[in-house]
Each structure stands twice: as structure tokens, then as C-alpha cells.
Length: 115
Image 1: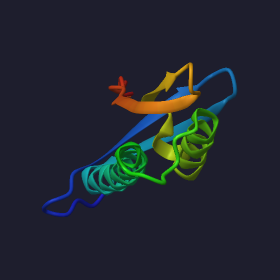
Image 2: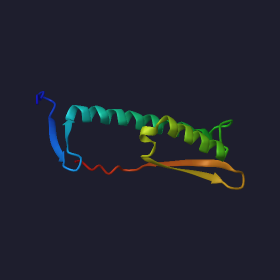
Image 3: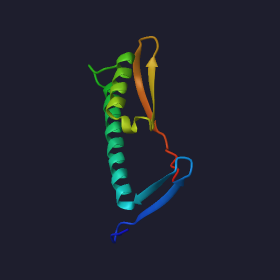
């Protein structure tokens, strides 16, 4: 296996006697950095969309109905499926008026298990 100066690549072979097959796992530091950059960009887009929705609560003439806010959050999650499961989103609703008063979100820490 060839390695570049800045890129460490490793490969591991795993035998599966039940299925009588061999699996080869490859890991590249450069590929890992690239994937992490892509995920960071998706997270940034997702949080930007949530912030924009949150900022609307302080402005006149913006969306505030609770059911519509939930629809909008669903649309944002649909557009960002790769990272939407990494977040917990809570919508604070005024039960009397049925309007949303706040959105809170928190990014869940992923537990990464390497093989």
C-alpha cells in the first residue's frame, strides 16, 4: 500500500468463517478529514436554518403558529437528513394562544466506536 507524506492509510483484513468471505477495511486520514469537513458544513447549514427560524420570534409578521413551526422544523430536518438525528429540538409553545415562543436545540454527542 502506498502512503503519501501527509496521509496515513491503513488496511485490515477480517475473515468471516460463517459466510466463507474476507472483508477488507481501509482507513485514510485524508478521507477522514474530508468527511469531517462535509459533516461540519451540514451541521452549520442545519443550525443556520434553526437560528433563522428562532430569530423570527422577535420580528413582526413572521411565522409563530406552533403547528407551522413544527412543519418548518420537519422540512429543515428533511433537507438535512445526514445530521438531523444528531440534534434534539424543543419548541416552547404558549398553550393558550397556540403559538410558539421559543426553539431550543442541542447537538447530541456521537459515540464513535472504531473497529
